[in-house]
Figure 1 (cartoon, rainbow, N blue to C red):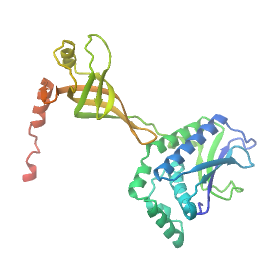
Figure 2: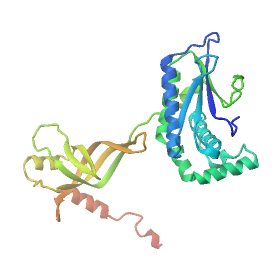
Figure 3: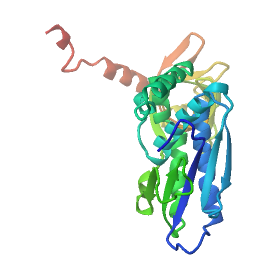
Figure 4: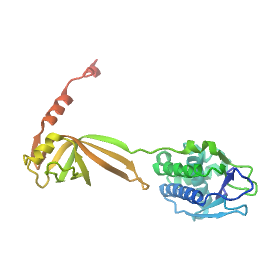
Length: 308
């Protein structure tokens, strides 16, 4: 069981062949990297500087120990306890964290102290929800167990926080048959934005060329496919006056994901339809735009029901 004073976590890679202490170096290195990534993500969200240290016990390199090295004065052990609860829950137990998880196994004095530290660190439901949904932690966990699956000699991993001489009594134990349960696939979310304003930087006016247009959307320089054949034809026939500040009102599609720093990444832009275009105070509505406007203004069966 995790105690307030515990400063480390042991990972025991249990091998099918009990007579050996040898496992794949690649699997050990890659899985350790994902462990470090996830721990660093959590520390970053909590604004804690963490120097993670590692080593091996005398039993061999299949037993790894990670020490959570934090220097926060008198609060060090309490912060370390909080980070370890978060990490173990999300990474090795695949559990949603709740605020009462930090105190439910403590005595009254320890629980009060942990609550004080949580308050000082501004760890509230918003921060907890951010950690629970943190894509980078999920990706690191998935990659960790994906690596373990490649080594058929590993029958289980077990986690301990203390009493390292007694490896048979684990705090958490995961059989290899369950490794796949911790692996998720992450597909970018495809978004479609109606009436997206895209500024045109470089149109493609050469016929027969499968070249992406250059533009700007919400301050981001983008390359996009122009899927509106009518607008593309008008551009190629020089029927549109492209000039500085020229923009299109469009239906814009793109893929969206989040990187390791929680920054939104968008790519694979496509303009599916052009509703209008212009510059300064000049604006021309396209036939597609007129159709869209009429459709949006059509009454529905539910209009006026709030008055009933």
